[in-house]
Length: 312
Image (spheres, rainbow, N blue to C red):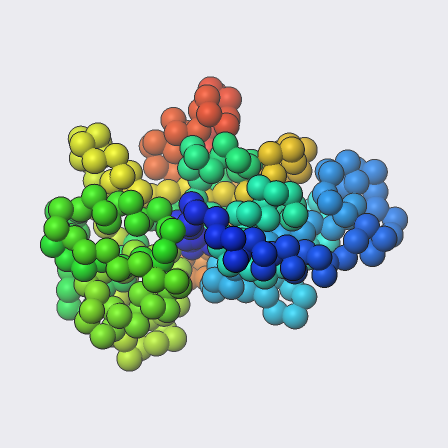
């Protein structure tokens, strides 16, 4: 819910097949809600009145309990869907399956800390950012790492396919440890086989509470300078990143409607309440870095677009 997860860029065949299997079992048009308003039907979801969402279990960003999606991203989507008159229908897969489901239009949307990137937006649509994710590190208690230079020659862990993989590979002397999921990062960090784990901040905060035996803490990396990023472009992923809900390319009406609701949640304070509910600091999560606007202007947003933010 990359929260936030800086999720994989690769799409695995097995994940695609998993999602296709779950989609095949999903409800068809005849099973959708009755008496759907014309306004809701015009949003163009696969089943009128229903928004089918692919999710990876990634608490506290996304989890499925029964037929309900919960977590930070889940709560945001549920709030938006209620405003739009949509029923949320989750389908569980892995991260690669999430992206594949959107890009093949097997689902209406995927959520869960998906990081906006210029490459990903070529194959799908991103909403306005529901929140921004600071560069968080899981480290063993007593250890302190502040800058990219501090990471040189260390063992650095993250999840396979997350965009941090590229950043880690650019750190001089660093050894990459890539795992199928975050549990592998935490296990090896606790055992001393990894020095630093790059994961989404709410995930690290939750692990601190749920697995105190690991003796880990959360630290935030000082973002690399513009000069450092220019010299090593992959360092850009060590900067705060913007998340987004990800939709198929043709779902323009749905994307616009969801973005409008996200923007309203910044204004009315609802987004700050949800971030705080899951242990996040709205000052960290809901104020964009200076380069967020410039990254998307002229790419998938107008030249005068301003990213949502809480009052400064």
